[in-house]
Image 1 (tube, rainbow, N blue to C red):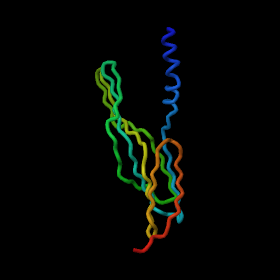
Image 2 (cartoon, rainbow, N blue to C red):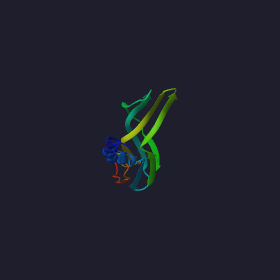
Image 3 (cartoon, rainbow, N blue to C red):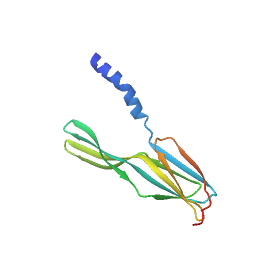
Image 4 (cartoon, rainbow, N blue to C red):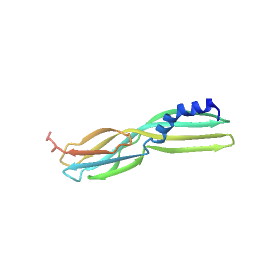
Length: 141
């Protein structure tokens, strides 16, 4: 290896180490008082496209997305998902491409009959998200 190659590799090493340590999963757990409330999760993020054609590589943030709320079940509840999911891939001849869905943030909604609904914004960093929600009795109109 030439000295120039070694210098470039040394300069890129911290970046490569960070990429290699990127979180892969997000864990969300919700506990409520009283127990048994319905818990919903909405995730949003960005789609990116990575492509390679005849040796040229590139990545482009294509668009943002927001999923509808999905039920996680009744509290206490836990849910785990991949922070980035490969959504589509194309390969043929000298060309290759893939679309990746990266979850960046979300909203957790907690609902129980007779209580005010609660909604919390969360960021998906790979660190566990543990919510403890004290529900308040609904006020009469």
